[in-house]
Image (cartoon, rainbow, N blue to C red):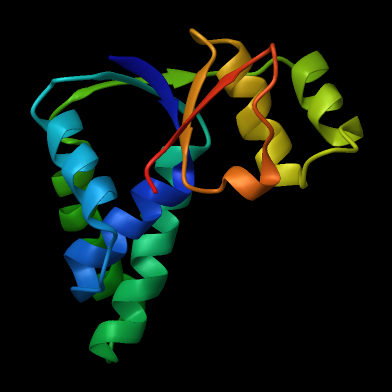
Length: 146
């Protein structure tokens, strides 16, 4: 299967790996399938940076580190590698016009509008658990993991 993946699912997976937080079973299984190469997955070109930054922040929380910058960087990079090392990942880059469309989108919050624009550039299948902020319309097909 091919689809654009919501950044929040990846963040939740990172939180599960790093902090052993609970994660919906369907989302966890999907992430494992992605890492096994069973799906082609598009993500925003902003997502890898956001995930690494998030992992660093959570590593500082978890470990109460004396040297938070150095140690948190090391821990974040380790878990980042666990998330993205395997699988068929591809990033979607938006043009300035597409970012402009997202900034003027009245239906979605900023972050959701950016992801919506990215989904439009793929095969228009968008996998998210955040369906309340998106409506299934003729432009994209929503796939949910609930």
